[in-house]
Image (cartoon, rainbow over the protein chains, first blue to last red):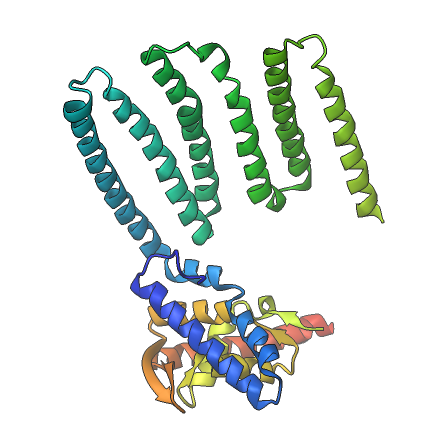
Length: 248
Length: 112
């Protein structure tokens, strides 16, 4: 299962077979020593503990090549399908191109999102931290386009009530989710001071999102700022608890 | 106290070649030989061994072939002539370094 998402290159398949063979040997060896099957099974699983560094070592060149191949394949397939959908909808459904350009715009935004996810998965699989982090940022940008720009544009073009005046409120929410993910996935490996700076910044973004949304929809601009005081208090408590635990 | 694979860093290839110079062997057997010879003090990861195999194969120090033993299909490693030369050089270097380190760590300064 660990190798399910990896590209089926010669090197990866060989590595999988080799590690599997070592696991079997480890299991047999353990059984010969008289230990119960479950214990031996758990011990043999240890072989796979550090498989990612092995994958990275054997796949250095192949990874980039496989990524390039998959990206070209994904791009070609995606845009061929998108073009087909564009023409079919234009001719068969809308009888013209006056609205069907929205398919291309939405499709392009979706493509950016899918591409970022694909790069992120590769970065995670092959332990390439910079690629994972950069593609997470790409996911954030394309999520803003998908969740804010496209719906607002679509509603405007379709002649419904414009939502541009408040749809931007989703941006701080997406920014918060992005920062939180970045912090959870990459923050803990960084310096301690950096972790706290990122945590503070992330919670500040969340508070701002809450402040703006609550104030806008309930017209509470004069009261909602209290959210920042609450944030300060919560952060101080969390910091104190963490410091006490560290000193204990 | 068990030492991590870090203490073997820079020597992993030489150790593997030392095991392979007498007979061909497979991954788990090599790993087990290292761990057993280490008297339980060496904790080396399987991935470390595997990456060393790949490096050595790339550098022409070993070659591989698939074989069967007791019904199990395994990848066997075999030392090449280049691997033997490399091993001899590394053993010589190790002996020289060992003599120097013995003096330095043992506090025998100024002795020739």
